[in-house]
Length: 93
Ligand SMILES: [Zn+2]
Image (cartoon, rainbow, N blue to C red):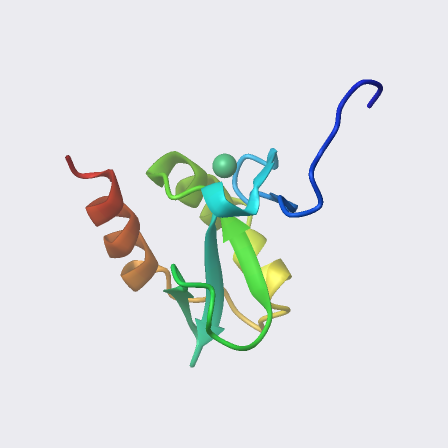
């Protein structure tokens, strides 16, 4: 980490999909509501959050790795349909 300066105002988070660290602002915060993953694009929803790149590749990786189940300590894999729709809309031109 020599020579690498990070301003304190730019916190990093790890994407639960590709496991790469990125600036919080580049990642989509996700919270769990009633057994489903909900995109929290404004970062205002309460509760435990997970961070993922707003990209289908990372979302698929996270689902395959059960990363959301682990991140939210959920008893079962949360529903990601709404989150997927959101990411698809973000990815659309
Ligand atoms: Zn990622």
